[in-house]
Length: 398
Image (cartoon, rainbow, N blue to C red; front, side, top):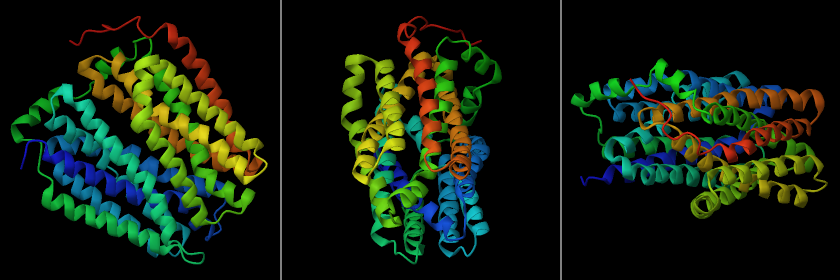
């Protein structure tokens, strides 16, 4: 195989995986309501996946370093396929939870795909490779809802999940026959040496910007996940949208995010800087969440979601770039992993908080809650405009 041919395999693997995931997300609240789930239980269903992923992701990372990327990818895809099948056949809310927890345990594809990119590309080419993984992720999550919407029926939600299982199974076969191993036995000791240690973590957290950025990540993902976990319930109650319409709505949001991340954010970052792009993203999400609260009609609601989608498109690449720039080379991966942990924690807390507020204080309350959190994030980000370049060589690794 050619030197960079694994990148194509990684791209297709991530795309198919996120295509299945994108099918599920807009439909999950509707399926849960079939079993009389309230807002809290819908939020718990979202959070169960993220909690399982958060707990098991470090294990998969260690296993991929020790035994190789290929077996971890294949095991993960088997778990995803099984999870989708359980969801399709589920006859109770308990089985829905089992499905999501199993899928969360097996959710190792993205981080392992990123590790493959790091294995096969030199440092100066890795940003482009990571961008390729991000593009596959975005495309899968964008077109997944549309695919699910095409096949969902008013009285039967099973077909989209059979399709998701089929895609995951196809993904397994694709990886089984075409994905090479990228970790050699002689390199295992190198991965052990590169492991992010507790002393390095403590040193990293002394950098002026890093703790602030990690707190912002946690706040942002709590707010965003509170919105994401309750949006299906909200549009059903407020505008009587069915599952098919909600899937197409998610598709529209995904298209906007893909356009922003694919062609706009890079040029703006070069011209205005990452901190300003991050501020634009946070402001967009704030405007979108607050506008949802006051939207009197469906067209106005759709209009409110446009700045939210634009803001989300700006946020992730700007935050990742800022953290990588402020981190020393030796611990960059560990700090980025810590940022992912903050995102995972946010995706655990957010749906639970959003679902509880939805039940107790009404359907608009998760978005008021999210707006307040995003405003706090803005207050933390704004002073960073004057602090970004104060410390570039910030620590020595012993």
